[in-house]
Amino acid sequence: MLETLLSLFSSDLVYASIRLTTPLLFAAMGGVFSERSGVLNIGLEGMMLAGALAAVIGSHQTGDPWMGVLYALIAGGITALLHAVITITFRADQVVSGVAINILMLGLTGVVFRAYFGITTAQIRVPAFIPMPVPLLSEIPFLGTVLFDHIPLVYIAFLLVPLVHFTMFHTTWGLKIRAVGEHPRAADTVGVNVFLIRYLCVIFSGMLAGVGGAVMTIGFLNTFMENITAGRGFIAFSAIIFGKWNPLGAFLACLLFGAADAFQLRIQAFGLELPYQLVVMLPYVVTLLALFGVGRARAPAASCLPYVRDSA
Image 1 (tube, helix red, strand yellow):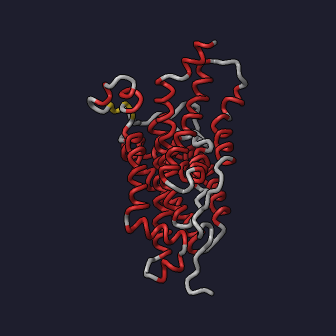
Image 2 (spheres, one colour):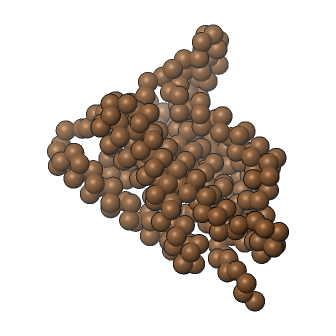
Image 3 (cartoon, helix red, strand yellow):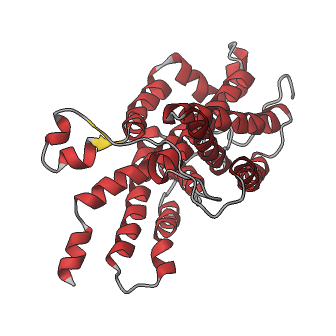
């Protein structure tokens, strides 16, 4: 029994944790832009679903998984544009809009998948990414295996973290985003286009969430099934809150949730005598516990508040 428990914590667990963190990272890094601009984006789940299906269709049509990523970017961006129009232009409730998008995409992706591939019991297979070891670095004992032998999207996701942090806190563009999220009227007064900033941030968040969905289909599973994201968009949203709307904090939260997901898969693989339902719910329990323990976290002051120019 002791040997079984020790074998759970191996290089395979670390490797799987990094893989399963990747889709969360894409969605969370995109969500940081939307949240920091003052638009609550609880619709990340639906945007991931849109990207997941679009990636499969794109890869199937072109035979190139990179084109699948492009399709995912477009699908996620269009879905996010819908959220932006509803919440920014028509000033609808941002939570309601996000929930509606999640429900819409849950049903729509299933319908489109059947319409495109037909109703079949055979599992659809499309061209997918394969691991690309980094020369020299992948030969380092232990670290080479767990860090430098992944599909390209994994490397891109982890490189996004410092890039997003630098953009948000060390560029003029990032300053404008944070100003719009904290005090849009003051930003408008000094010539910042509040509506444009929010539109771009929401669309960008959807594009990255779409790539997060693509990671799951043409990166890991090489197929599509209904509700393939299984709540990972909500976990990414939780990571943003747990990380206190900071890219580095969100990154650490994604690592935590990814590790919990990998751990539950390892438990199932080792066949420990635990109820299946109890094991599967582990990542979601960790997410809830993390949110309970987040402490005092202040969201951007203008979050969820539609901006109306020249109003009292």
